[in-house]
Amino acid sequence: MKHLVIIGLVIPEPASTAAGHRMMQLIHVFSEADYKITFLTASNNIEFSEKIEIQKIEINNESFDEKIRNLNPDVVLFDRYVTEEQFGWRVFDNCPNAVKIIDTEDLHFLREARRKAFVEKRIVEKADFINDVFVREIASILRCDLSLIISEFEYDLLVDEFKINPDLLFYIPFLTDHFEKSKIPFEERKHFVSIGNFLHEPNWQTVLNLKQIWKSIKKKLPEAELHIYGAYTSQKVLELHNEKDGFLVKGRADSVKEIFNQAKVLLAPIPFGAGLKGKLWESMKFGLPNVTSTIGAEAMHKDLPWNGFIEDSDEAFVEKAVDLYQNENLWNKAQENGYRILDSVYKKDLFADFFINKVSELMENLDNYRTENYLGKILQHHQLNSTKYMSRWIEEKNKK
Image (cartoon, rainbow, N blue to C red; front, side):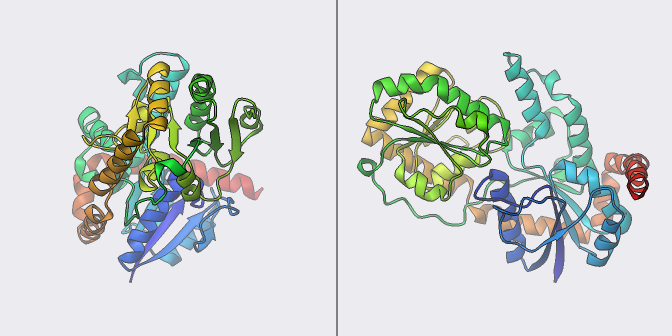
């Protein structure tokens, strides 16, 4: 039996985050391919995490070296570039023949570039991409044998703009195994909904945007309410709650499916970010039409009609939200569009076997792959002579 070790930034919380969904999907793909799976993490987010077997590790501690040697994995999957920075050199030192894969989740340098432009109230420029995160994230991608990219837009950005070798990348979006069409009809639903983990800055900015435009929607639909859900709800979010205006902050969602089955329209005017948006993927899955922004819908539907509307101006967003809420024919068509997108873009059968075959090919020809990745070898060498010794210094400091 082949052995996969996952080094997680956090323990997966599929009920709270899109990243948690993503990680659990990858775990299921490897499990179905008959891999033994060991999940390592230094995180302590146990309360709302998925029930998987977890082994604790420490950052900047030589105990990891013995652990990884004893586990002796065939494949190591790093959860985002920061775990590769912290543990990649240790894996290479102790298990040089293990295939190293990084799941980028989304391109963090792209998200940072868009955040900066958003704060400065201007359009993103290519120069914004070349930030501190870019240098670190691209280095991690080059040091690994394979990087998983969740968005076709981000895949093309890496290949076309930054000339990353496509052999180092693998496009694999959210995966839909099977879904049942919602049985809750238009006339039995009411109210708008928004959802998102509040540790993620774009979700907070989305809610602030909704606070600004909600009064315009409420004026046209006096009986409607907007229900705001999200894990890790802070005091600043709770202070937006207003019963009179129908702007209701509900906190953590116990069941996204149940909430989405009751609501009529999802609102997601996402101002910046990267990757694929889990809330929009789930809105398709559970048959809930939505109104979102260009950033929200980016790389999510190929050329297929959206399951609702994509609008960037506040006026158009309000107009389409009201139309979708009131027009049953429009709503039903949007719901069917979502199902069509799921079946064409996210079907698990389109990716799972191909991905596992790619990993097997890497295991069988690892030396050849690494010989071709000469930039990765250079960066690996310099990491072993910089990050490694900084970490060793911290180890010694901690002992004292």
